[in-house]
Length: 246
Ligand code: GLN
Image (cartoon, rainbow, N blue to C red):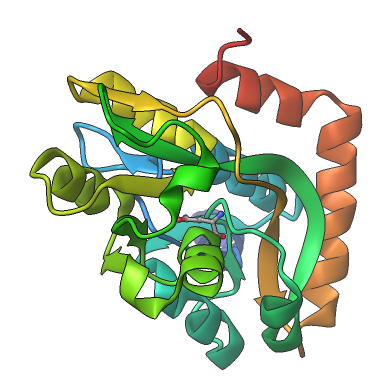
């Protein structure tokens, strides 16, 4: 009898162990981002990366039965990281551009962004037309950087590792303005005295997730999950949590 009990116990333990093993083996979805782009990604007081992109990726991962892991890196290293397989997917308020689409596949778009101009209150810059001949602060490798360097020349742009540093340079008078996406622009202007966003907008663009060219399977799964989340109203819910309608 004792023997049977022991055997039964061993069987139960083995079963429990196997079940445990299965959850521990949950596949990891590694997302790369640059966590200085509020409200899409930022670091909270507990050092967790939060924001719209983090929550969308978490919702997609949940649908795929995967566990989300987020890596914070420089914005201009994200495309290389995803194409080399160091990360599985980029969600970084990343704009779909033809040049990037040569290196990676983009998912369906989940948000739009607008390039805007931040200036100091009382600045002589009143519209986009006043940017010629000015020093423009940008985040290195972003579309703001690419467009401004293209429109006003390499010498016109001063490149920073993230938007916050570009805004700091504006406050220190090292640049005349900052070109950056509208939502982070709002967050930076709110957090810093004496800045404003120009009424005239520069360019409207689409944000999407970037996935390695070879990883067609993940691209399809990501798009399916994203479509479901859109249909369920989950994407709107996440965006609404961080961006209040005006
Ligand atoms: N949307 C811009 C781009 O893709 C900026 C993104 C960012 O700074 N995280 O270049």
